[in-house]
Length: 123
Ligand code: AMP
Image 1: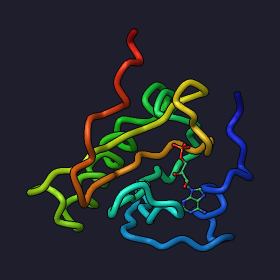
Image 2 (image 1 turned 60 degrees about the vertical axis):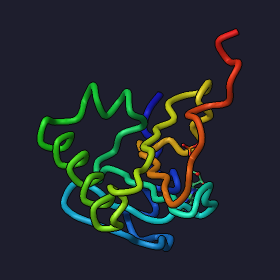
Image 3 (image 1 turned 180 degrees about the vertical axis):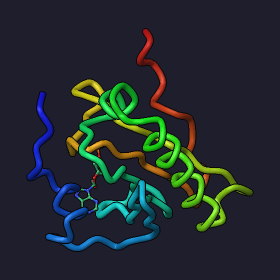
Image 4 (image 1 turned 180 degrees about the horizontal axis):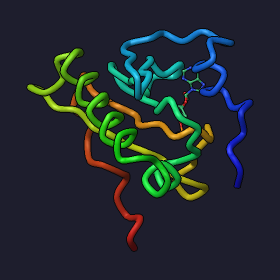
């Protein structure tokens, strides 16, 4: 699969559509999810053209990867999420229902998030 430069997060990065920005640096942009699944639901995306966690991890530079994950921590710190905790999720591909084909991490917080996924999937 090739990177689609018309995906919605690419348009947000180019400023073609608005986002509710939370944080930005050289490596990452963070903004509130348009359909929040928790009281805090922030998406963090790398500035480069990467389709997924798999693509970014395999082909991103060491600088991009370290800069991106440091940005994720900075977002959590900025929102003061460390004390009560938070969850970081990345959906990759069809089984995980990845909808937007620009790599992103979800930061979820602000309440008891329950167990990681619904029970029974391994049965
Ligand atoms: P995923 O299933 O991991 O690809 O999740 C994509 C996420 O992007 C969903 O949680 C959507 O609610 C969110 N989303 C889609 N369009 C926008 C947008 N324009 N601004 C903010 N979040 C968006």
